[in-house]
Length: 476
Image 1: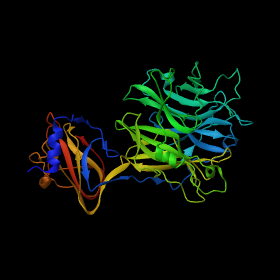
Image 2: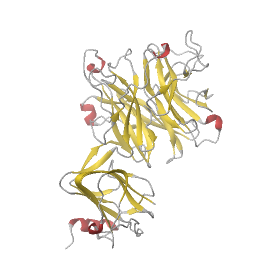
Image 3: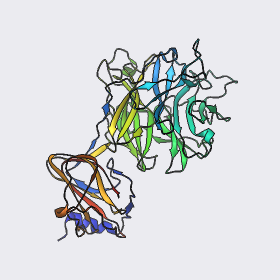
Image 4: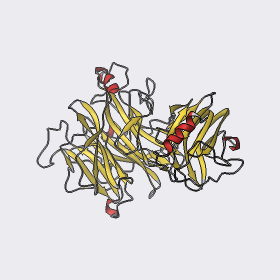
């Protein structure tokens, strides 16, 4: 008599198209590659804040009010440093784009340039003042563009506060873009604003999307005139942009809590998209200096197409707010994208102990998480099981990113469409994985090479006890 699992596998064999995974890491942040599981729970990963926070502080008159991310951070291989483009505000709302750089994300310098003076200071780290003021500049190094004068790209909202205080000389409000050969000296696009009329007063996010072969920008609008929501615009040339469309708005549960989406930081990662959505409670306490309530925090959201988003752990901050007295006690706003550095992922963020008012102060902190460890499928003392969908496995060995407690293990078998283990790859032959590794190779009686996948694909069944499985992949 067939087991329920075997019956389900047989029933789905004819109508399930195998998923080609190549050598990409398959993150278990959602059920994209999972066909079934039991006695497992999905648990968000742990982020560790830097002990030296804040790592970038207010020092100069032009940043007396804020060093804020509204901004971007990325590793630049050409100078072998992390580049940080942040919003420097002297007084509300005199905001300009400033620059800092670091080799490790902890120790920073602010190079001074003779480009944009401030008061009596001829040398500053201000790189772009905007037509009016810059709001949420997003910057990245573009390896896709063949034109070296456009190697670095900047996208920012540009408008006065209030937005009605425009002038014919400076033009209409909206989204501006700039280009640079070196990330320091910037030239605005002649057609600015490239998206006219959009007042996206938050952190923007822009990058080259290799999946879509387009530039994509995540901006903000007000849905139905009352709900802060995330929009998406696309471009083939970084100058001509599609009309922004709402792709992520507060759910019914969010609205019950009066939570709105202040911004969305997005990072392309292993063929998918990792998002940090900024949650903002639209309540009087958020603007009250005497209140001690959370004001803004990031939650982990994921997407497979950049348009449909879901939270991994609703209501749980990805980076927790700090204790009372900390620089990030009430507000955390993240850089436009994460910084990938070897086996760790750095997240730079602006923190504030203040309410959401014009005079709130910001400085910049850093947190990190290990590669792939955004979320795991976790088993306790009772053995749990995870069966993948049919996969097209390339030639190579099966690797896992996992943590196993003492007395626990992760075993795997390779099964066919009937749920039967392939010869040599049964649970009985699995050597089992123990310990803590970002790249643990699985073996069966010492052998690691995987069998070829059939036309209907191959499934992997994981049996786990006292373990967390974050991702798996195939590599040589």
